[in-house]
Image (tube, rainbow, N blue to C red):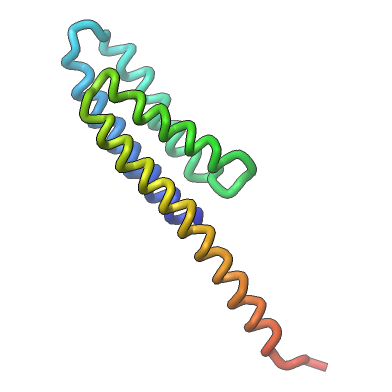
Length: 118
C-alpha cells in the first residue's frame, strides 16, 4: 500500500505546485499567501508518504484529498483534478491493502512449506 499511496502523493505535489502557479495570477491573492498555503500542502504530501502505513496516515490522506478538491474554489480546474486524485487515492488504498494481504498469504504459505531444519 505504501508504494501506491506514495506515488499518488508525489503526483499531488506536482499538481499543487502547478495550481499555485495558476493561483498567483489572481490579483486578490498575494504571492506569499499562495506559496505559504501551497508549500505547506506540498510538504504535507511529502511527509505523508512516510506516514501512510502508520495509524492515522490514511485518514490524513483523505483530509488532504478533501482540501485538494476544496482548492477548486481558488483554481477552478482543481475541482476536476482533486476528484481525479481522490479516485487515485481510493484505488491506492483499496488495492494496496489487497496487495499487502496477498503478500502476507504468500509469505505464510512459503513458511509453511519450508522444511524444518531439525
